[in-house]
Length: 290
Image 1: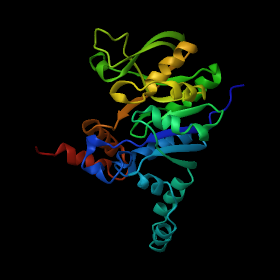
Image 2 (image 1 turned 60 degrees about the vertical axis):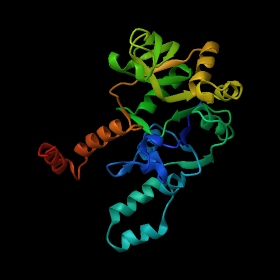
Image 3 (image 1 turned 90 degrees about the vertical axis):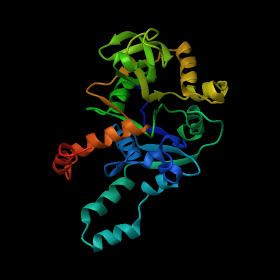
Image 4 (image 1 turned 180 degrees about the vertical axis):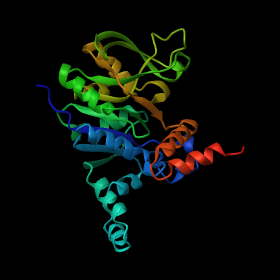
């Protein structure tokens, strides 16, 4: 029986320079999708998938993330005294989503560094990695589909979605071999290929289930492009040692909230689905004069 995936790492130490000046004092992961921070959507996906412990790797300007998942007793009391029971209950729900562990990032730039920083907290267990500024909405949740694949095959895996061929230059495209249904063996990953270079249109990114072997590889991985430690370089090394699978997410839609345009598209889409404002917001957009 496969060892249970109980822990998830969420790197959240980046500067968010594409959203300056908004992110000068506010983490990009805390930008709201209507009334919910991006990182809360990511955490909720992990919890819905069975994750019990969330390790968030932060930086010097990310204290508000910790505050968000804390329980503010004074605010809760005020809400109840003023009859806002639903909002008070929501604060308790957020604080009780999981056991939260916070680590301050140390080491070179690059998205491999925050993962390596969590080594001592993970121990000898398989674990998940999710980015704090993007997500995939699906039913069942993306990470649950990946955990199911881990339990079936006991092989590290990466979430994957089909993208339009005209957009392959934005993603890491997987050259794959079919295993079963929506599961593929990754032969190689081609990072941001031209349309001519792309081995297909299956973009593998966004979430990962890995074993502690990844930490050993990261510790020996030389700094890559831009002098940074890249997770993709370590996974490429791992894939030479053993199988790594891509899990094509069923019923999934990818939301990249890490750039202004895609962030705004996400806010509009979620606003149109929000039960409190959807009708009025739709009417506003229909009558908007530019």
